[in-house]
Image (spheres, one colour):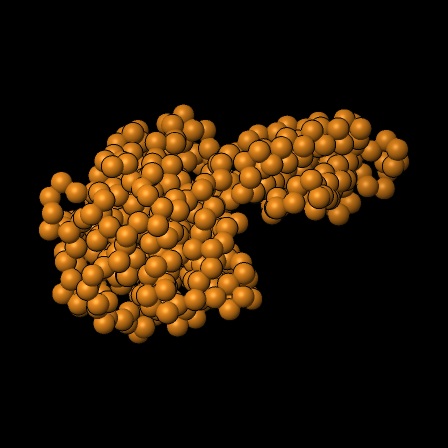
Amino acid sequence: MDLRSAPSNPDIVIGEPLPIVKPDPQRLVANLRAINEIGSDPAGGVTRLAFTPQERQSHDLAAEWLRDLGFEVRVDAVGNTIGRRQGSRTGTHAIALGSHLDTVPCGGGFDGTVGVVGAVEVVRMLDTAGLGLESPLMVVIFAGEEGARFGEPCIGSKAAAGMLTEQKLRRLQDDGGVTLADAMASVGMEPHRLQTARWDPATVAAFLELHIEQARVLESGGQAVGLVDVISGSTRLKLDILGRAEHSGGTPMELRRDAMAAAAEIILGVEGLANDHRHRGTRATVGRLEVRPNNITTIPGRVNFAVDVRDVDTDRQRAAAREIVERAYWICERRGVELRVEVMADTSPAVLPVWLRDLMGKSCSDLGVGFRTLASGAGHDAAIVSRLVPAGMLLIPCQDGLSHVPEEWASVSDIVRGVEVLFHVVLKLDAFLARWG
């Protein structure tokens, strides 16, 4: 059957008692520390940008763990690390687990990393309990999930889903003018073989991702686990304003073509639009701004900045992005400056399958773990993979909802609980696939 349309509320009860095996807290902490020593940033936090030696080094370490656990490990053309171990039944779809290891600049040590370390721990728990799965098991570490370097998020999972082109790899550039294709090649990848990274959906039953919430819903509500029903989409815009750089004292106010003033008006408009009742649920952010010549006594002649528009409603997401661009053109025309707009990335929201969420909820109930269903405002590889195969996400709380900053933190007890739930989801999914798959 097509698992993307599996029955809701299927009979997912495993007929045997739940195995008594727990995640090892000390091992989880040690593995998190080992990963986060790679790219530890003197400026604070962790910096492992996409397609840098630091990202590859972290992939290599996790790959070594998987080989020690009997996995066959390969790295595809775009840098996704994929470990696979055969199940007892041949010709069956694999259960895939994983996340990513790249970060934003001066980011935290839990975003993505918890999902990778947690997936490896699930494998160790299976081995400790002497449990063999009928289905093959895959651990996937996606490359380039964060859009911090090239503006395009989820590069590795988009390649797996067939959502990238070689032309785009050659077009996207970082702040230093390095193309995505050249960055891949610099760390040993093969961007010209992009199409070989695409997954065959006939080989994967489902993908599961454990992640920190990156918000305060679970923490404020006292729930241990969040089951994601929808993941926000994101439209990322690059706006480049060209005015005229002139002397700050010699140029009368009425003759100025101030690129910074135009940018300031646009940025406040972005905030105002997201707070408008018509866009309830939209989040719009300007997180990067570059000013030239950036001198206290010179009127700014050029400003470029990026706008990130997110929403769980695809129509509202695109409408907000269009309205931001329309307002920006009107403001720039009124101020006598030029505006250039580029769409860096555009990803739709993803609705995750009910049957897989029901299975995860049953695992939580069996373990006595409190949970709730919630949307994820952050983007994830699971959202991209869900376009190809069923995907499910388990979220655990993070302190004060902080993420993408050095202060990002999740407690050991919350990580352990999340890994334990993930372990039992794998067992239930394996039993479910034996019956329905």
